[in-house]
Image 1 (tube, rainbow, N blue to C red):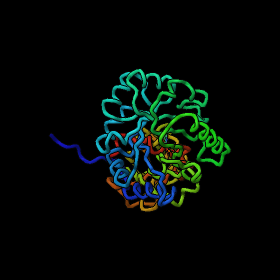
Image 2: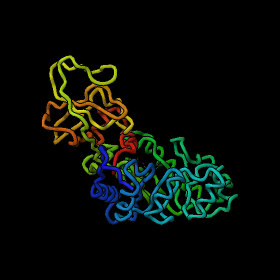
Image 3: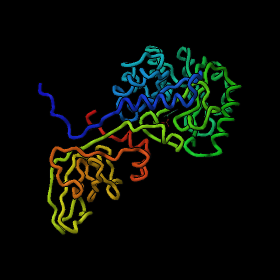
Image 4: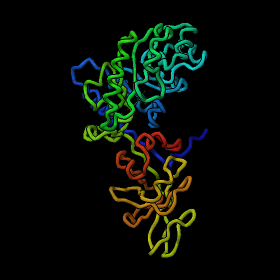
Length: 349
Ligand SMILES: *Cc1c(COP(=O)(O)O)cnc(C)c1O
């Protein structure tokens, strides 16, 4: 068999920065505190790769690994034992409940229906998500007295903040609602904070933190700006160099027309790789700190950039995507979460 030649797209994951981000978030809960720090590793570690990230987070000391789907469990199970994996969507079918028991991964129960299913299929230890205002998954305050909920063997009682990344009165409201829930169901541990929630302070921390975005270099709130390092460094190669003449147009619908002669590069990067059309208008790629503006529309597999600032570059040279996430989000209009999870399959990790 022949191995394929190296790809013209690559994604470097800075595993030192990943570990440093985990430690920095854990340290925000206080060095000697009893608060444990887990990691959200759903969606293939926010697109950066379970195989690249989970061992680093495990070795750093992560106490729990959160995925959304049951289909995400096998990849994580390659690196950590089942007791440390938590499935946020919970058991929706008897098959899912059977799978949870067979491999020993505890589900998060999110509704009375899921509680009944979990009990009917054999009960046993689980976690419980309570809804304190986000109205997504979770049992609402009025459902907690239901016999199915009262009959659960709950390890962690969780809730999720809707607006932790803003100075919103909703944060304190949800904290109070969570405190009320704690009195209504027996549990062993409490968990409320995502990345941004950690910055809200120790009143929010409880027993277990669940950061995701900030581990991977996202900065959801200003308090974390100096603490979090960039982790994902995507790059794309030049596959053709061209000399544009004044009056030449570039790409679909001739959205850019050269006003003067200029060197340009066709780059192996398109919207199929997660570099969406919203980058076309104000976007640029970079080389050695030089900005290379995008010319015209982003195609499925290609984008054209102005090489005026870097005329020596040629086929095979690498360009950086501007992936400092807070800046990239402002420029593209995409959320930092979207910027990470959208990176496509053609990036070689
Ligand atoms: C995704 C998720 C997290 C992590 O959130 P970030 O904002 O990425 O830190 C934590 N808890 C739950 C329930 C989640 O779904």
